[in-house]
Length: 133
Image 1: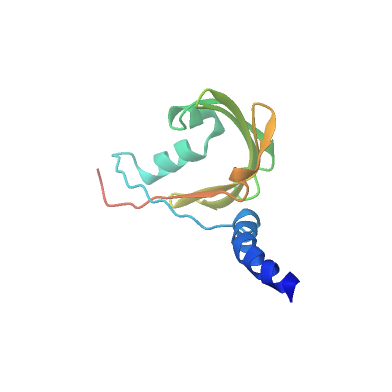
Image 2 (image 1 turned 90 degrees about the horizontal axis):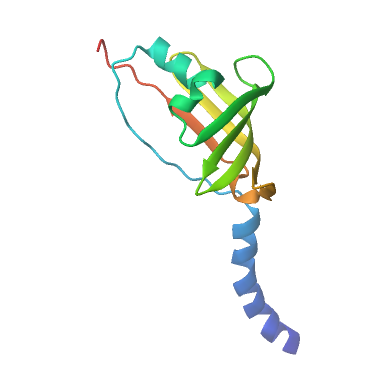
């Protein structure tokens, strides 16, 4: 009985922490914008590793690791974030021409050390065509 008296409060305090650390969390962020570019041109710029520097903040390098353009393409991005060098191995998950482009983080390193906070981070860009611009 004495063991139970201290075990229950301990579990109540520790269990939420364990769940928070080890279970994936879903977060969502929506950003809206507009451009006069055609959906074809915009999709080409978004998905081109050679053109990513034009829209990806702090990007230093973007290389194809494996796969053709489309889902399952793996890419390595190197960028600066708050003065740190970040290397991100990503896999393209969504590729719908003129509509959606998405990727997930497989592994991120900051200054050579593994960063676990980006694990399972997914990004999806959805394009909405509103007519001729």
